[in-house]
Image (tube, rainbow, N blue to C red):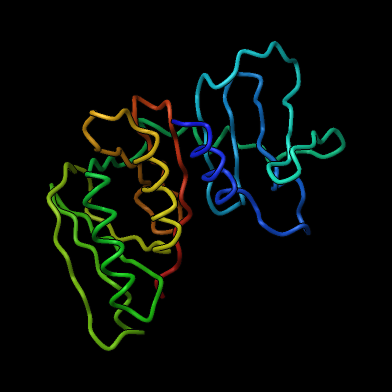
Amino acid sequence: MQKNKLYQHLKKIVYKCDSRPVLQCVQYHTDGSLRATDSHVMLKIKDFHNLEIKQPILQNIFTMEFETERAYPNTDRHFDRKGKTNKLVVSLGVLKRIITALKEGSFSNVVEIELSENHLKMTNNHQNSEIPIVIDVACSYTDEPMKIGFSADVLLRMVNFMLDAKNRYEVDDVTIHLDNSPVVPALCEIQEGKYQFIVTPVRMN
């Protein structure tokens, strides 16, 4: 990914307000990855740096100053979930078009996802909308049927990042790991896990 695009995405991922300055930081992890979070989404880019460090380094994305006094959230457990989850594979370009259409056609910012075998149904939160919109999408999914809801804005943050991160001529599929639960965050990844993006769901009831 181009450096200027990465910087723009990082500014959208970290926490915006000064009340939680540690969440305005990116973390250079000891495993060579770069990480960022606002507590609702998390990003991990593998093999980002080759610094030989014994402790993670924090850098404020807005001031570019290094933080030495603050403790960063432990993000390791959130990324170590593959093999324990349901797996959805779907086109990022298709997701972007559908989420944008649902968002524009609804008073709500919530998108409901319903999964069954090789079938994805996406619906706007029609309880708060005059016109319910339902869009069916082909996908790769062979696990248990489930429903889960997400903020459209948060999903678009993930989709836009992944589209910019993927190799130019590569298929734009994203793999989404989901626990069979409507409250557990989804782990999205491309390029065999080089880019991982966690999205927190919203309660539908």
